[in-house]
Length: 171
Image 1 (tube, rainbow, N blue to C red):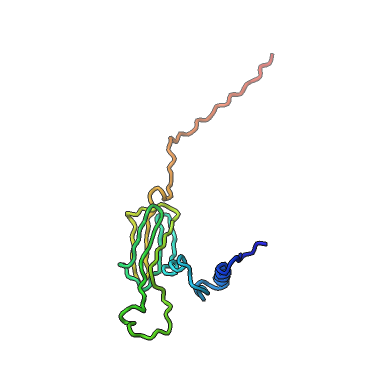
Image 2: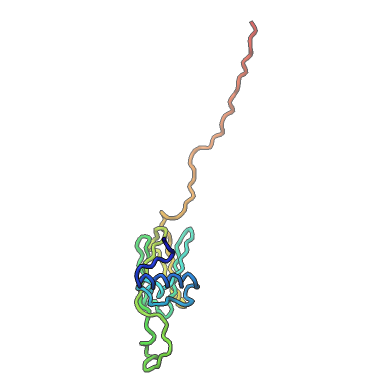
């Protein structure tokens, strides 16, 4: 019998419980019950929203505690990669000699790649960083933009067709 949460090993039990908790509660309400996988950890360091218009794809990424110098962006065809490092506040000068009671802010290196549904023009891409939010505007390549196609030809009025009546000749 197939179940929604297949379990085959202890790792499977852990993953099944994580999935159950993530579906039962809103994202981020309680987080994972156990440590995050490397991919999930990297994803949690840089959360994103992505949307597209007719002319561009926009990526909004939350990067609190980071500076623009710590973020690297590469664009190749329709794949965007954002990487960087979130500093560990426990290692800052202000925190030296401090007694920590709670230390939950994420830190470490991350690398996220995102494939967007259209080819973009990397040369015209713009990135801004304000208040911990990275805004990446990726103009769609000309070949990916919707186009209105004009129909070519001549516009001539059709000539009326003359219908001749045949008259029956009496013999």
